[in-house]
Image 1 (cartoon, rainbow, N blue to C red):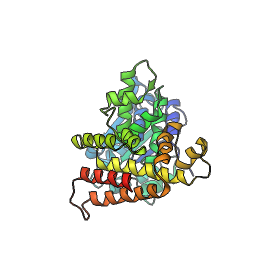
Image 2 (image 1 turned 180 degrees about the horizontal axis):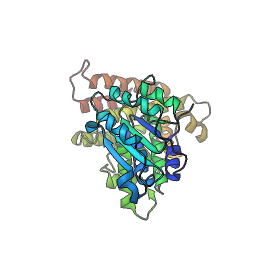
Image 3 (image 1 turned 90 degrees about the vertical axis):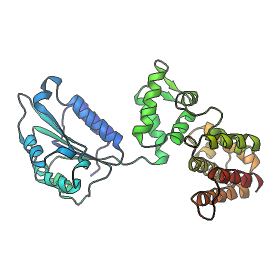
Image 4 (image 1 turned 120 degrees about the horizontal axis):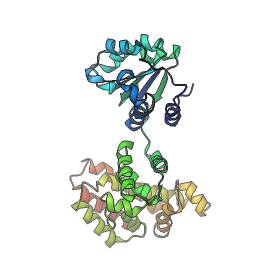
Length: 342
């Protein structure tokens, strides 16, 4: 049976009908777990009834027997009550402790909605607790970490939910400079949304102005310079990176150079060089992302593109101290020199 998704659970909570007596929320991506818990707190019990019919426990100072006893009590002058166990992972020997809820979960009080929020990991499918859900209408939600290639879609989706459009370049900049987890990158989107106010589009310029990314010295400008073998501009950017290492880690820069030449190598061997075919072939989501690849086709042949990938892998090994004691930015300059002269 397919597990319900985030939006499906959120929609049912907001409607307030057909709710299950038990929800087990777990996984590494904490953003969605927090949003579901917030929805329970905000939509299930009216504000006037919360003193008697809404109880919140925290893992590190909770007693299992007392939580179960609270769940078994009937609501006071209401149709239902809500009991939430937050931060369940902070309980001493959390996974074994949570097993003690199995008898209750197998036969829950139908007038109580009991929510367990367990972050950072998934409970074992063979655990007594999860097996107990088979005999009740309990809902299990797994909040899996977002893959790198999925992040852009999540950012766009979140911006849309706030009523904002976002430029392709702005999305790419958030992915590469902020990255996961979602709580971190969405926090930056929230900040931008507040700054923008009535303007309903987030641009690359907004990212540069408000998230501390230099307009002229960033990895996007570096790839642009590399794509056309602009050695002086590339060296200027690398010099800036070396002076600002916290915001320009070499591992991110190398990753972007690697990704560029990976796309370029694919593009070289595509029989159809039309924009649509190239977008599909290299995995670009917009024509904007193809600009550097198209430029690179003019300056690098297939052999040079493949060699560049090899040099990036070589940089990765050396930057970890394998057969090299060079400064990582010296290694980065060496990488660029090899790419431009191979």
